[in-house]
Length: 351
Image 1 (cartoon, rainbow, N blue to C red):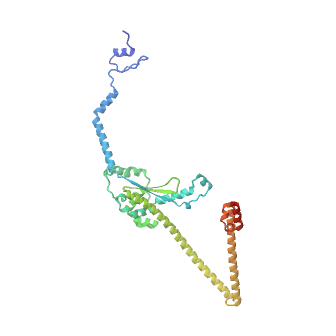
Image 2: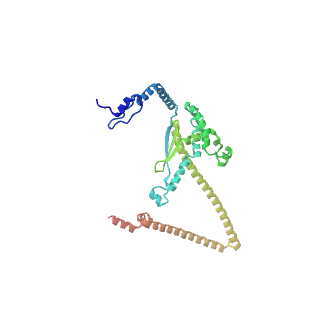
Image 3: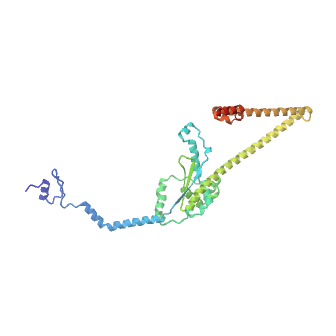
């Protein structure tokens, strides 16, 4: 018989030795006879704990199904607005070449902030009566999951969040705040404030790519209400724009009326001064005074006519100067379009 390898000899000589010696070259290490197989040990452990594992899986599945059943579905609706591009102009060559105008983008972002403002959302809340809607005013009773998670929310609001949040700013009294901002006292209604916060939290306002189209998206447990909110926000924004323009026109009208009244007073003072001068110089009621008055009237008429002709000719000169930079606009000038010689030349050119 041939001799056994060195590793096998050691194991046979000392069967209680629980270690593996290095095998000669070309042979694999020899596992001790009494060393357990780890894979089979894990399988046997899982087999012994299969009831616990299956139970935990069933409990997790039941909790997940309960959370899905208790979750409130949210419906999303959108409306679109297009800004008036005539109010946005490129102000620099760099902006025209790059396609981005920082001033225009700033104006657009300002409009987005106006749409999401508390004042505008308050109009929507009042129009749709959301202050009396339990889905928005915070009076809807919480579900099972909300009750289960309420202790964690309380712990966060009373403990952790107070440590991380900055100190709150002093809030003025509702009456003083209403007097300072000029807003009605209805802002002090907690249900209205809750409804405004709920609508603002579920409202998204964004631009459609690199366009002037604004997308207003609203979420609500009621699909019809989400569509009504999105449309109401768009309508409130348009109404606010109209109110702003009307207010600007009203202020301009008031200023013009005040200016006209001031000019009337100045005219009256001037007429009284002229009448006093005529009385002092003996021009009132005399033939010479009548002749002088007629002469002044004729001179004033001639001056007005000469001034009108000068303004008209200056306008033509400006139009010709602009047309000289763009020959295609020469045909739009009345003197050129009505000139018979130029018309004959055009006909000959066409023939």
